[in-house]
Image (tube, rainbow, N blue to C red; front, side, top):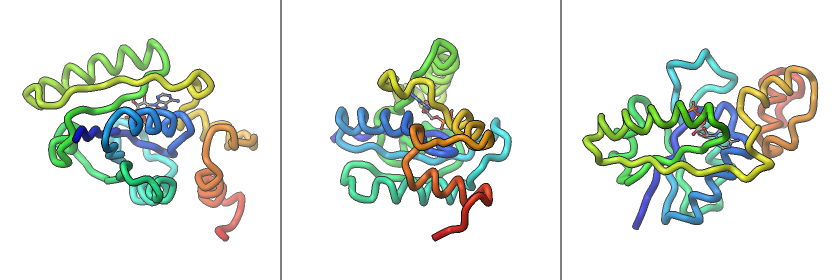
Length: 165
Ligand code: ADP
């Protein structure tokens, strides 16, 4: 059985992330989504716990998709959950530069135990990022094309634009 880890901040999870998750779940037996606090990113919209709860709700009916949270190195989390590889999504050349460095480091610090598999989002999702979605919402524009209805609702509640149902 081949398990893979898909680590990220997911603040919030977008249809771009979900497209990568769908592809990974078709390719591998199990996908473990790891919601991580990225210490390099300034404090986000949702807490790690809130992001975890949102993603768990989105995938509650999927047998081969599991959601976890963690801190520390992605490779350690991958090893802890028995994942042979880390999935990363690529959008652009600038993603590529960053991911190549990350891949080398991850191999190095895991003594070659954890590989990285890069997947490409379908064209309509390639320009979507969590930060762009947050900016579009701040501009008062509709984000329905970029995130699931549940995520949109949670974002509107968080921004005080609507009250929780
Ligand atoms: P991180 O903080 O690790 O960058 P993100 O939540 O921003 O976490 O992204 C997690 C992974 O998903 C990264 O590999 C990122 O490149 C990828 N990703 C994010 N959005 C998209 C998208 N629209 N298409 C393809 N990959 C994406």
